[in-house]
Image (cartoon, rainbow, N blue to C red):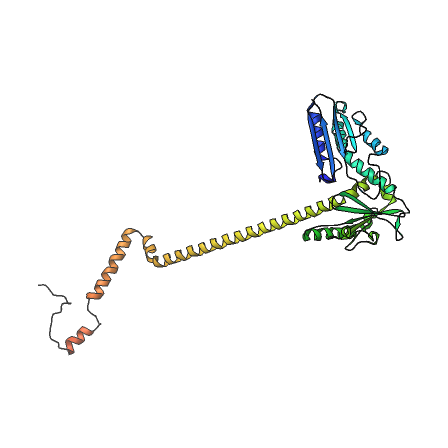
Length: 377
């Protein structure tokens, strides 16, 4: 995620383009980045070796007054990137806290070139982190409110303030969570509850303890109502002296500045994952229903075809049997059947012994019948 990286992706791309051009390019470009950070990049065709980079970062707090410029320690960190390439111009350009003159002709070759350009693109992270460090270290320990240390309101991104409360031996960072959509609120609160459960385990005992509450913590008592009106509750982290030792200080400060961005990234990714799973599930169900409909249609067609075959076989059973026989045999069978039918119609009824009985006992006159036979002499 771009907003979680220290180096600015857009600024890095522009610097690489200028370096790979191998010639001076006329450029006067303003670049605005998420978090109210502004860059001004200038390069002239008449100056082949130098380009100018001006940087403006937001004031984190109006309550703690710090010098508008850059501290001496921060300047040393910036020039330590590569003293031959990076030079700080004083005074800075009007409207900016820092102006750098870059000499790309002195960049080291190989992989070190990309490393130096990436570090130059991350100068705004150095400035912001240094300001937060100075702010935490310069808080008056006697500035209390009702027996408690007064919270410091910090605004790194518009409409996303968070609070730092200094206490003995530790700091407490409190983040009010705002989301417009109800599904985002549910995902975020579930994530915070899981974060609490994981943080309480032995495996993550060294991580800053996390606490989520739907109501404002007591450390924010007396703050403005608009800052305490949330939809996702409040997330608090306890930062002890162990978390700010050595190199851990930079990581801790950068994590605090980008906690909102990380939560939004998690909510967006989770929502996209859920929607993608639902879409795949829906496509699977539709495909299953489609296959079932096709199978039902095929079964119905097979049943209709079988019924037609049965009806055809029942009506043409004799014809099928006859067609399987040789042609002379078929003709002979047909002739014999026809002959038997004619005989049944034209022949007399014959009773065995009736002729002898008739000649002896019955004297009937002779008559000729149209159905009888006539003896030819």
